[in-house]
Length: 309
Image 1 (cartoon, rainbow, N blue to C red):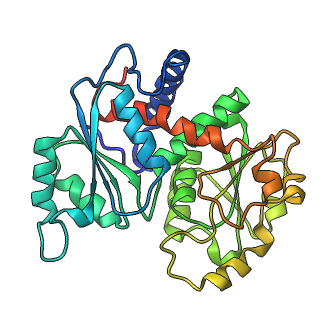
Image 2 (image 1 turned 30 degrees about the horizontal axis):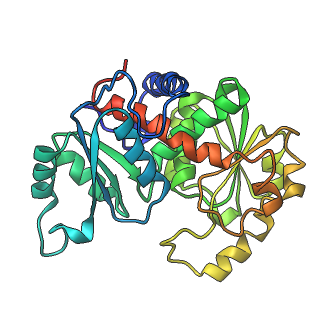
């Protein structure tokens, strides 16, 4: 049984196998409609249980389509509809029920500890659909998108992140170690990645480059990533944070420091951190990025269900 919780805990070889499988499956679906199953229906009869403690659009839709296209089914739960919680049913007992009814469990949560507890008691694989510390399904799909657009391994590209040091960046940092690509990070000094994350990178004999100047971070970039500065549950002075990031807005001027064919990506939803003339430009591939979530998550499911070939 294989879980998919953090990219740093999965070997580079297995991550690459997921991407290779996703590429093959996407190519084979070119003439199929949205709800038609893959011809091999590898997850026929399997059930994926999804639970969302945080709002979701892309993750919810893409996992629904992913399991459907593989021949399986899904049911979506909200934690406030269950007995789970203070004074209710324990995670241990909930995990037992989930394991009896489903074949896999995808959790989008506001608690890393909750994922760890579920992992301890589940007898089916768990997939991290987003947690405070990481967003592994998003970033692995982003790697897929970058390689599809550029037609080469991401290890040969210069990748830049402009924005807050959040869960998506944490997973991108892990990906930079696993796939050996150069990663520049542009953010204000007080928002740089946490010490333990940078220490982990160092322990892996790798390096990421952190700049408090967005232009320096963007120099010679093949791809620039960004994300919303104010996350949904950010418990901060929002006005101050927006002001702190005013020099880190992705606009045409910032893009001019990157390569001419630099691709812009954003995991969405967007905010004031990106100007329309970049977001809607020919270099922006955000809609392809979102769509590719389906293809990569199919292969993640196969990895977790022991069906990846």
